Structures are given as C-alpha cells and as structure tokens.
Image (cartoon, helix red, strand yellow):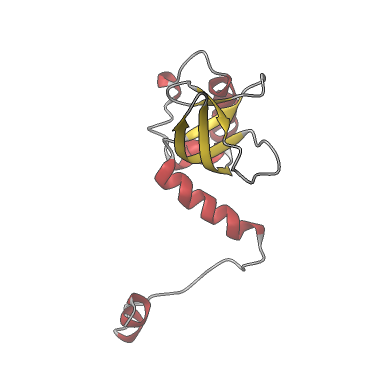
Length: 132
C-alpha cells in the first residue's frame, strides 16, 4: 500500500492538488523544489559570458554534455567537474527571486562576494521584492 492510499483510507484529510501538466507552472514548481535542495549550487552568467558560482566566485562553464539550448542568466547545477577547465553539469535555469525567497539566510546579501556581478543583481531583486 502506498502512502497516499494509506492516508486516504485512514481519512487524514489528504487533498491531492497539482498544477496541470501542460501549465508552465508545473515545471517552475519542479525547479523551485530543486532550488530548495540545491540552493548552494547556483551560478550566474557574467557579462564576460562565463558563469560564476555565487558563494565562492569560481568561474565555470556549462559542460558540453549539457543539453540547454541557450545560456540562462541563472542556473542551478548538480555537479562541479574539474578537468583542465571548471565545468558545471546537470544544469537547469532558475529565477533569482527564488533564491531570496527559498533560501534567504544562505543568500544574505552582506555575505556575498563583492567581486561578482550577481550580488548587484540580487540587491536590485531584493529591493523590488521587499519594496526597499
């Protein structure tokens, strides 16, 4: 017996709700869930065309095996690969607002490296979200 069936049979008031599979929000919800677990593994596309990891400001490139058809401004990655270059692999695009709402303590703006462009962008987003 799976958990849903168990909870339903014993009347725990479980309500099943989901966004329609064809809705863009369906995929946003999946990416938000990924951010909640992998928020420490985020990179931002700098003006130079190279990504920089947010906390330790390491310059990285998206691994050639990644199937993204564009270079998103913000990415979440699963794996950091060190070869002759620094690569990030298993990548998906994210929205920077999610970082500030899902993991606000980790993305405390006072602790971010001053030398990365992402900090200035996050400051602007923070001011817009929280009306400061």
